[in-house]
Image 1 (cartoon, each protein chain N blue to C red):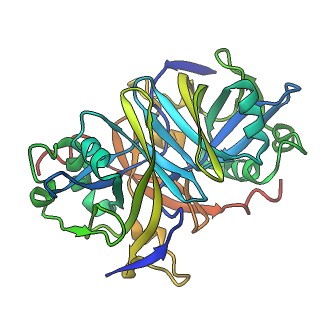
Image 2: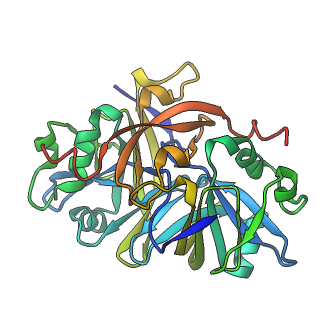
Length: 188
Length: 188
C-alpha cells in the first residue's frame, strides 16, 4: 500500500556536484548543487538549477559558463561546506584548502583535487520558480589519469562519487556493481 | 594531471528512473531514463529528457503528464528491459510481469511494485537537441508503507535505488551513509 508524502523533492539518487564560476572581480567560487542531471546527448548537456540568491547565480549570468567538479567521498566535508558557505562573504577555495584551476575552454574554474570535471558553456536559461535552470553544453570532460581504467574511461570505484538523499538529508557512497546496462534486461 | 576525454555525457551519479505514461489508446507504458534530475524546490519539479523517437515522448506530448517510479535493486533487470524495449511494439508491463497503477492525480500510470513514485504534470518543454526536456511539477510523492522509517520518510537502504554510470555503462547500488548534509562541512 502506497502512502502519500506530499508535493516535495523526494527522490533518489541525486548528485553532489560542485559548480565552479568566477565572479565579476575574477575570484573563483564554488557551490554544491544536487538539483541537476544530464539533459541531452547531442550536444552533450548538463542541467543545474540554482536559486537567484546564490552568488553562483550572478556569476553564471555574467560569464555564461560554469564547470562541474565531481567530489570523491574523501572530500565529502568540503563538498558539504561548499553548499553551506556563500562566495559573497568568503573565499571558499581558500577556506577549504583546495585549488582553483582555470578551464582552458570556458570562463570558469574547477577544483583541481577532484578527479572528474565538466567544462560547460551556458546555452539555455529556464526560469522555473525558486530555482533557475542553467543548461550547459559540455565542451570537454577531464579526468585524473589515476582514476582511468584500462578502457580509458574513469573507474567508478576509484571516482567514489557521492549521492545525496534529498529531504532525508544524508550523503551516501556508491555501492557494488549490479550489472551492465542495455544488457541485463535482454532476457526478459 | 587531468586528461581530456572529449565532449560527452560522462558524469556520476545519474539516476535510473522509470517514466510512466499512457498512449492514445490508454495503454500504460514505461521507459527508463537516466537523463534527469530535480530542477526546482518551489514548485517542486523534476526534469527528464527523452529522444523524440521514444514512444514515451509522444505519450507525454499528448497527455502532458508522467510519473517517475524509482526501481529498487531487485528490479534492475526489469528497469534495464524498460530502457531496451519500445512501447510501440510491446506491452512492457505485461512482458515484465509488473502492474500499472493509475495515478489519482495525473493522467499517467506508475509501477505498483516500485516503492517510490512521483506524479508529475508537465509545465515546461525545452527542445535542446537530440533530447527534449520535460519539466514536471511534482504533485505528490507516494511511497510503500514498508520502506518508511520512523520519521515518516523513506529509508534509503530499504529503497535501494540504482545508480547509472553513463558511457561506462554499468548499474550500481547505493553505498554506505557518509554523513549528514548541511552539517559535516560546518567545521571548515
